[in-house]
Length: 437
Image (cartoon, rainbow, N blue to C red; front, side, top):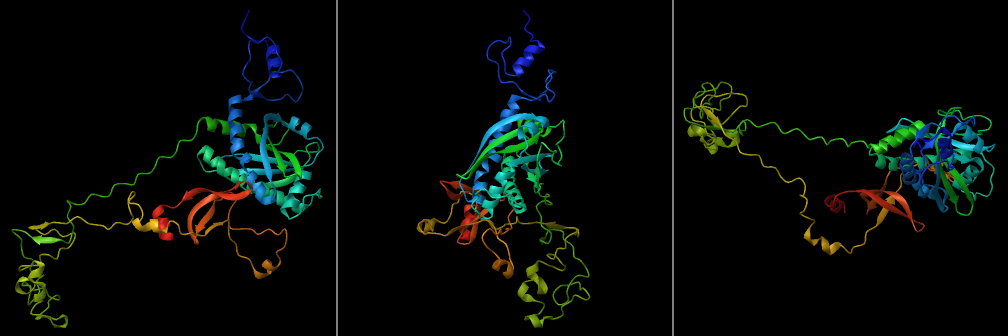
């Protein structure tokens, strides 16, 4: 008996049936559903291993944004990955039925070249929009302002997702503001890229529960080509860029420093550069006849100790000691001393001051700043319940942690036992922290 499977047996395995195989087989790779219902050959689109990897990415990225939604809605929120499968456009349209959806297109501007789409039922979008505007979310009618509110929530969620994707793929990932519109798949396809009759998507379903108010499924759609690209990059992670090594300093000329000349044997005089009254040879225009009375140095500046008037500068009958860079003087040897620099920063391991232990029990005021903005007085007076104040922080950007109004760290907002907290992501070194305090 041959070990090869017939086409009928392959089709039966793909449909989940039995059919002439041996023992338990591993789960098959995802295939493109047949929109025509025929029994033609199925085309494998993405492997099961890639699906498992993308499932973990979904859990760690969009599945970890429940804290963002909870903060925006001021309600307990859970967001759990429920299903991940490959669907074509006809299947997506058939499963959506005649229901209206809010769809948001999120275009990646950095890190990836592709789009991600989020689907939310229109009636749930109305509940979310009402909660964000200060309402109770009790079966409200959908309004245009609800679409803006939902778009902002999805933008905040995807902003946090990009932070997770950057850590997973080891590169910078960024997105453009979402493009939001309503869609009914039974009537027409969305006016967006990737949606056409032959389109195939990776459908990622999340179970979204908002307190005891609403429970629904939020769907993320990724074009299968984009999903394949992400899976391939997970299998072959990008190599970190090599650290740039600064070039070595230019070598010094024999360890000598220009300008530090001493008289050596066989030195010659430089006629014409002497100073009358103290430096023989005479240099017109530079002479100091009789010394410098205004500086209290009569008689050729004897206070500087030179033979014949200025011996202290090492000039005997010439101008030795007043070296000029770039001038080669026969018989003059150049010597230099190594430069000494002060310590700019305390080396690692020296620790803080020994008396810091005396201050360890002093209480300090910790403040976490989400962001700031400037508003006109009239805008402040117009604030009311449901008003939205836009801050100077981008979605997903780290918040700042201050101690006594001094910045010491940055982090991200998390929720622990229904209380807000901050997970530190970067922190200044102990020496800078002590100086700030």
